[in-house]
Length: 86
Image (tube, rainbow, N blue to C red; front, top):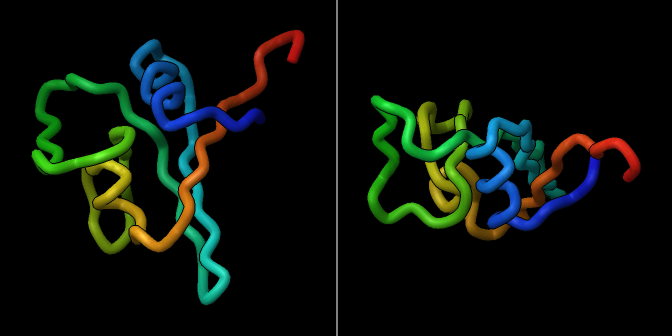
């Protein structure tokens, strides 16, 4: 896996690629979610979302942006499988 920026993560997901969003919480467990392509029929993320669109399962379940899926105090990192030659 290689780390990508939030903008790259959304682009990769929109193109059909796989991206994981992850955070580490030193005071408890971390959280993971997958980045979801934008524009899928039936998705209804909150209008004030920031960051990539995520398929989230946790305290909230559904399609949410980063600011709704992860605590604002945690650093979120994005990872995608390495392509050949990396």
